[in-house]
Amino acid sequence: MLKAYKFRIYPTKSQMTKMEQTLDLCRWTYNQTLAYRKNAWEKEGKSISKYETHNLLPTWKEMKPELGGVFSQTLQNVQERV
Image (tube, rainbow, N blue to C red; front, side, top):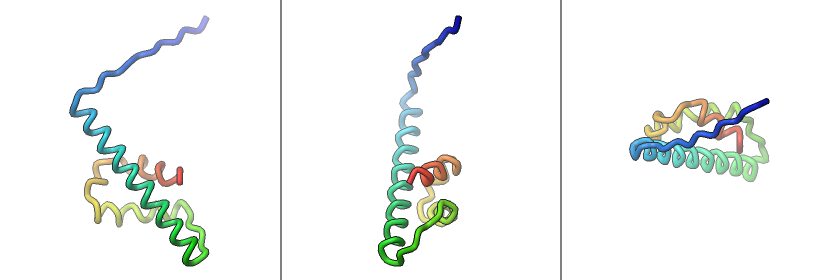
């Protein structure tokens, strides 16, 4: 017989703040990636690969240092969803 357990987590206020900041930065990355790809398609008729968008992350991290607080794999995953 298989058993399933459900656990509920109760993050502290500092953990909630960190999660909200991470979500905001992921949202920013998604929107920037979408805008970049959309502009490339509309202006040049060029499709941008996910690897080209991944190469934008170091530049964005220089422009927006807060992105350094989010794991790079998380940001790459956000870009893959675009």
